Structures are given as C-alpha cells and as structure tokens.
Length: 145
Image 1 (cartoon, rainbow, N blue to C red):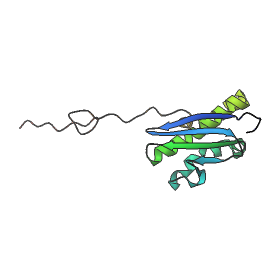
Image 2: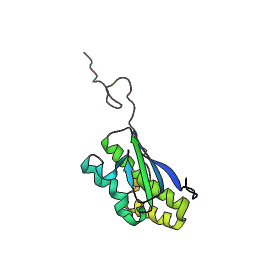
Image 3: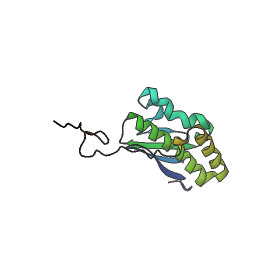
Image 4: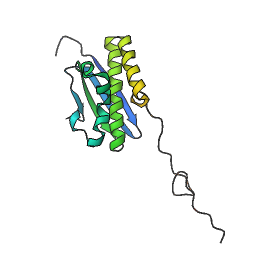
C-alpha cells in the first residue's frame, strides 16, 4: 500500500439497455474493457467509435490515467456507445476532481462540439407493448364480417 492516496473516479455510460461503468485512476494510460485491451473490442466495424474520445482529445490526456470499463446488457452497438460515453465522462470527472475546472471545461467543449451524445445520455427507451395489437403502436386489423 502506497502512502499517496489513490485518485479514483467512477462514472457510467448508458445506451438503451447497455450500461458501462468506468473506473478512472492515476496510471500509465491503460484502457481495458471487461478485462481485455481496448484494441480487441468487437465488432471491428464499430471499434473506431470506442476510440473517438481518445482521438478527439489526444493520447497525451489519457497517458496519465488508467480506465477500466465493465459493460453489461444491450446489444453490440449499444454496448459500444455506452463504452464510448463512459470513457469520455470518466476523463471529464477525473479532470474536474483532481486537475482543474478550466481543463475539464475545455475537454467537455471539445467532445460536445463533435457529438453531444458522447457526454449526454440518450433518453430514448423501448416502448412497452399494449393490448389489442402485436407491438407498442401496431393494432390488429379490424374486420366487420
């Protein structure tokens, strides 16, 4: 146990039913998703989406922190978007708590200018099915004979 107190923040990212919890702490710039390196995230086509916060802000901002992400629920795409949001929000929270407010605001402005959903979660959810039809909105066909 070191004598320096660990600098840790925990945040989450959400998309539909997928939830990604990110733990950001002082380290050497390691990014891990469910124990695996971030370069191995599947599907390959959406891997670029996970790297968006890193590419926008530059690797130098991530070189002093380790981010570990646990993701559960949802499908492939929602998990990717939840991971992406968790990475961005964890860095913002870390900079706000341990660095300074000005650099936190600068990071947030860069991310929001690119895509608002990186920082702010999407409130849309699946609508529940109702009676009288096969889905939430569709009704059974009406017949008079």
